[in-house]
Image (tube, rainbow, N blue to C red; front, top):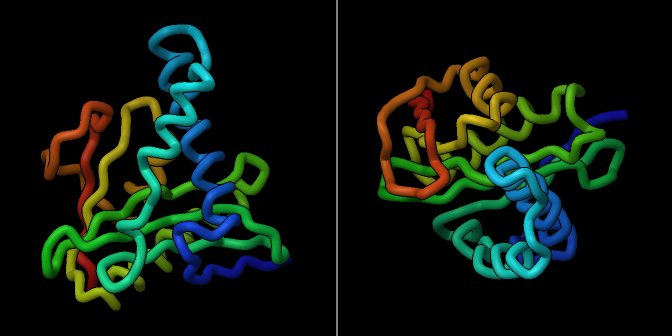
Length: 163
């Protein structure tokens, strides 16, 4: 089986399904850690609907979908924050697809997409409990830095200069 990564419309059925899976996982992880329960279904639906991903569409953004053996397996997005700085966001692989090299491939494709948008630097934020994500970013050359924006759930911020 092989990986492919290609641009995808943020509102396609594939993108919507991956966004739902991503949001459900990170929301449930937060609530399980802090409140010992999964996300309330109504709150989950509101959260998914509130973040459509329209900022991940051209000309100032791009959503990418990774497929493994042709099946949608994950996504990553970039969006310009300013002329030469883009934000990496929504990096996600379905649990059964992890450990097969797809995350590094997705991030590399997102870096290429950011360069195509004119960015020379990528920034991102993540939470302390998302240890796998933090390890991935460090392994891929991202360095931890101070906050570049305020977000109630952001606890770690990273940046990388793009060659």
